[in-house]
Image (tube, rainbow, N blue to C red; front, side, top):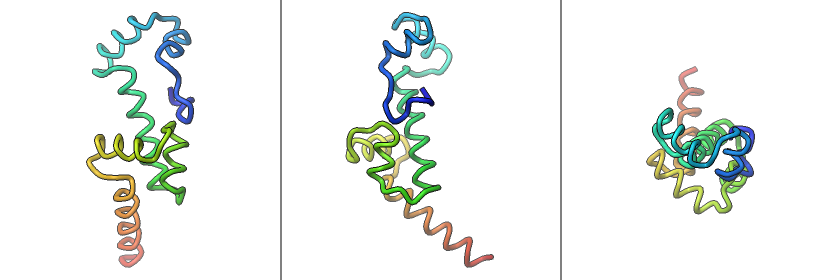
Length: 105
């Protein structure tokens, strides 16, 4: 999953690569991770997006594409649902934090 963020694999592709059936992989994910494979994959992609927003100057739309989202609006919606803030707010907060750090140094 982590190696395929820009072009996420389907559940069938994931199951095949693990040598499991779709039902087996879904059951194992629920047991071990407490979430569906799709939800886990989404969280990995959004975590990577958060790092890119905070640690790079990439435009939000490029971050979205790099993390496998087909549109910036879908990316923003998913991001807001997980982190309770928009990607733009995340980036703005990063700039404020950097400015405060520079002033106190």
